Length: 134
Image (cartoon, rainbow, N blue to C red; front, side, top):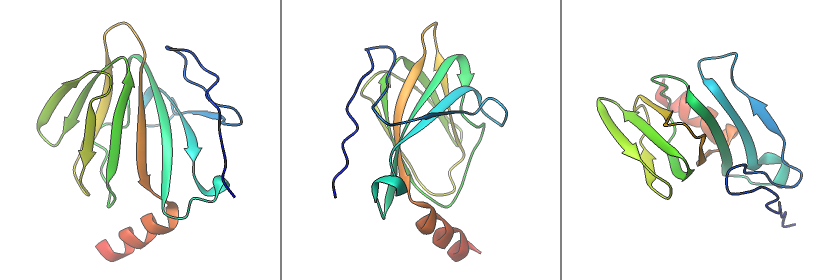
């Protein structure tokens, strides 16, 4: 059955009904929080659709890399994205495709939070990719 999470946020504070946030300050990320918008709880078998918010001066995990792809869209704020040795300054509605095993990180640039959508394979597919990479 279909699941709808209605947008209840604002232009600068993105939020959806029945979606909970998780902070990532205690790990490799700084000033970051995330939300799973569509995933296993909604019955998605092949992908996870996520929203991340990075506060000014914050960043995702530094030089992160893994066996799966990422599809990313900057929604608001400005980002500095590093993929391998390439650095890109991005604005809202810019898109990024990150291939498997490419080192990558995203940072908020400027004095406003930066938010982005990120689509990845689900955990079962991730585990299969990890196993195949061995």
